[in-house]
Length: 120
Image 1 (spheres, rainbow, N blue to C red):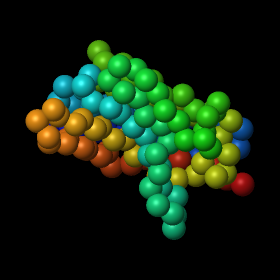
Image 2: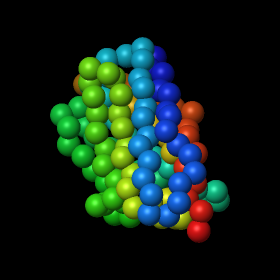
Image 3: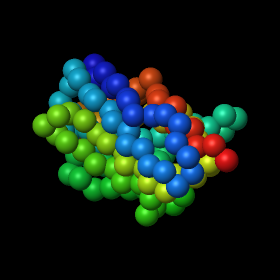
Image 4: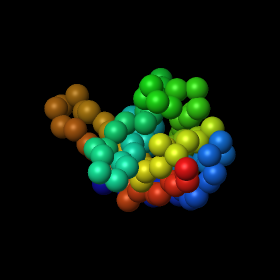
């Protein structure tokens, strides 16, 4: 069982920056694909960025060039650096850990979320 704890959310003016952190415990962090998702009021949860165990990254088109995901396998932490924030980035941001074992079972865990607010 993996526990994920996000931090770093808050209120920031448009054009500003925030760095989210997600600390993992209880599992072998390095084998998981780590992702950041977000959910705005009245909208579905969407993938923001992900980073594989090998370091390959993937971004939603809406954040490309502004957000950067990274991981530290020594600190068991994944980060989301968010620059040039826009009001439409306002959402609860969730950390996710995902691992598909070769024996068919999938291991998937979520953090509790951290609020990011960018006033218009």
